[in-house]
Length: 413
Ligand code: HEM
Image 1 (cartoon, rainbow, N blue to C red):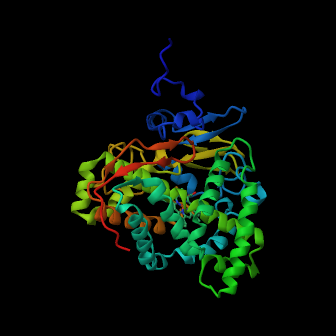
Image 2 (tube, protein in one colour; image 1 turned 180 degrees about the horizontal axis):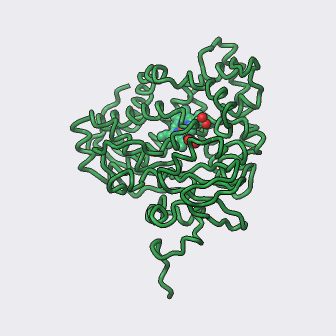
Image 3 (cartoon, rainbow, N blue to C red; image 1 turned 90 degrees about the vertical axis):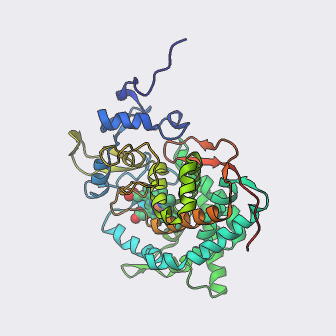
């Protein structure tokens, strides 16, 4: 039997980083490390005969992210197929697909909901949610950390923000799964039907919130928002809603679950966190860096240019591998080591640092802090009770199950 070719031996010119097989056990870190050393700006061939430039260094990811004039989100979208998930025309209503100056105007609509002040005010509500979520499992002495904690937490917080009833959490979960599947599907437009269902739901919610006089929800704020003196049209409101359901949900879920898993793999660091909860904020940054759950977004060159010594032609697509940039050895010492004492930040988990930098970063950090504080405070003897299950995807580092056990405790809610 032939010996399988290892990541150290494979011919880099032939590797397709989008092949889900390479992501079965999570991101292919050894291969990405080799690319950072040998071919940081590398042409990645695709099975359909096209390809894209693959960027694995922190420096190039930052450069592209901060130069939307040369590397556009609007021109070819942010996934490899312009019509990925839904048709490009609909996608282009999405903040992520806009370039300045349009992007700046539309981002302002959401920005007010995510200022540090607004986010800080949410802390009590977020804590109350996690108290209840932990109450539901604490007496049992074990749970599936993904299903029971990391899924309902971020979805509940989104309901809070948007003024949606908690009983709709399973519906929102179903739609996120569908949008995720649409992202992974080989054929474009795979989530169009889901958007039709979401539109029906959104308009029901608008009517209900109007009738009940709920004014300060994100849904009502989107309805009242104006760009250049014009109200948003129905499809713009829908896409904003879809964006929040998509961007604010499984990203946070996967970071919570992977972050918890990596802590369980490092019990000495878990014990240090229990002894000194003051370490939690920097532990969260390390969890974000180490797990970097959104692996990449794409841009399209608007003109001929050069990057890392390679000639990039107008119309070429470039893919920024955030996962790899967050482990660049030129920036982080011993980058594959998980270390909650690390003080160097500037990881790329929330994007390359340009104008599309994650708008929900403050909220995600708050949720991660609260879940960690509450889990450490209430779940003594926390440990893994089985191996995590992953969903192989080149785009998102996803975990679907993480069985854990702990000393049973008392409800507090
Ligand atoms: C740990 C959790 C999260 C991760 C890892 C994450 C990651 C990202 C990434 C990588 C981007 C693209 C940045 C770029 O292209 O430069 C992004 C954009 C975005 N995220 Fe997050 N995100 C998280 C949580 C959230 C939450 C909780 C929300 C809101 C409820 C949110 C809302 C958004 C929005 C609206 C954008 C688009 C910003 C723009 O295009 O201007 N995200 N996020």
